[in-house]
Image 1 (cartoon, rainbow, N blue to C red):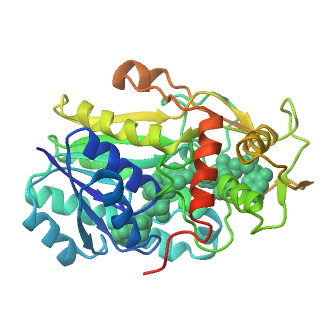
Image 2 (image 1 turned 60 degrees about the horizontal axis):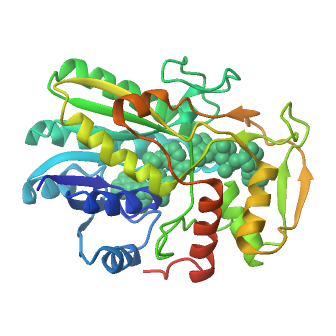
Image 3 (image 1 turned 120 degrees about the horizontal axis):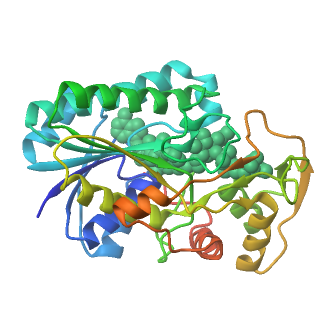
Length: 341
Ligand code: NAD
Ligand code: UD1
């Protein structure tokens, strides 16, 4: 059984991916410093899968700590989720974002070289396409100019991995550009568990639906879109998780090089449509008001999914209704999020 090192595996996307990996016959080792996640995730994963995953509380920027993980396990491949991801925070704390996101990947790649590990899947983002309005985004769409340090770290790290693949010809890399991952595992045991007031739409709507926050402000309703609000490509996190398994299987068939895939549904949903779908899921109205546009938002962003379908056989199966109902199930079962460590 091939062992996959999942860095950041206690986080939102990582924890769902751990389940998919397990269900598809992979052995998993998790490395996470718990800077944005909680130990309880491990218990929840055990309840869902019946398996206690091997977990190292390590900072991926710390080479000596992380080396232990490579020494003690026969690692076949890495999925690298470990990173900081809050756009607004990255503007306030650029040094922390560049330092954490860049050093963690550089350390992982250094140790992969040292231990002869040849396959890596990297969490990138549609944010690398910048502010272009030329949708849908294909993998060949030009990379844009990012509007914040978080986005730049993704942009730079894609380049780092391209450079590494030239220098280390046996290295096989998948760059996965996620669109808007939302939803939660059907059990309601794990889901997105942000600290403080959420910045992103789905966690915010959930908290309004639960009554923890008073109302949602829709950022702009004067865009050139059917209902005036922005369109985004929301993808269920469990579909996204399956995309990682397919990417690993694909890398196993490759001998070198970098492959890039969009992971989205190919469909744009407006903020108003998302609110309506969530209202259906929770059975009551979501109080909301229309406010000014948020700086840096583009009107429309969705993926071309052709390449992922043709090459990986990947197709997102779950609907916006599934995303809302799973999100609501997670919210109602864990109104305060997961217990603190
Ligand atoms: P998350 O914060 O829930 O998970 C990231 C995990 O990495 C956390 O558990 C955190 O504790 C850990 N981590 C951070 N820095 C670390 C370090 N130096 N060493 C060890 N662990 C560290 O975020 P997520 O939503 O699951 O995102 C996972 C990855 O996908 C991130 O790289 C993120 O940038 C990327 N991504 C996320 C989205 C999204 O909307 N959620 C979209 C595009 C890309
Ligand atoms: C955000 C990130 C982006 C990241 C992506 C992945 C920002 C600025 N961008 O994108 O870098 O790759 O997540 O998921 O954070 N909205 C409201 N009211 C709210 C919150 C959001 O109307 O309270 C709207 C936004 O204007 C946007 C849509 O909802 O039109 C989705 O917003 P969000 O969930 O923050 O995602 P993105 O901005 O697409």
